[in-house]
Amino acid sequence: MSRSIKQIGLISLFLMIGGCKDIRSLSNPDIPTAENFIPLKNVPTRLVHSQIVYVPIYSSIQRQLDRLNHLASILSIRNISPDDSIIISRIEYYDTNGKLLKRFIEKPFKLDKMSSKDFLVPQVDISGGSGANFIVKWETDKKVPSPLIESVMIGNFGPQGFAFSSRGKEIEAKFGQK
Image 1: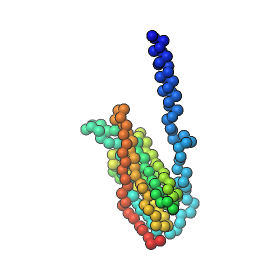
Image 2: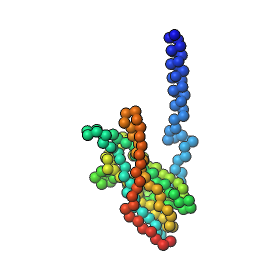
Image 3: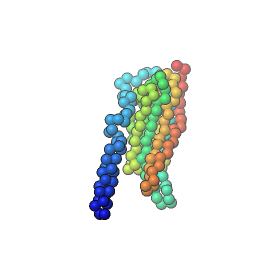
């Protein structure tokens, strides 16, 4: 009887370890990465179409009167234009009190048509607080659909995982005639 229990235990352990090979990591070559987020050497001089977008994220949420749950947050920028690239010229991360915490890019980047780029605020980074946010500015020299800019927050309460998203809100826009 004890030999059967040991065999079942070994088989279970083997299956658990073997099953871990299916877990995808960020370095997995089968998962596409954002190759179409390219630094620009020369920014076009006539950018006639642009937006500044406010994107709320939640580094922490209150789950009880005296307890916070810390979350990982992802800023996702998706160029939904099927024909044209856009330029991302500003990605700034602010805390609950409006203090600039980090600039995610130092120079403009081109985001190709139908491409996306994500930026991570890890769960251990609680500097933003519950009212953290991003400011994103995008520009182009053509009239294109506005990109989809949103945040995704991921966390857990004990063994139960959860995720939710929040869409960006335009705070400034410039739309030319081109």
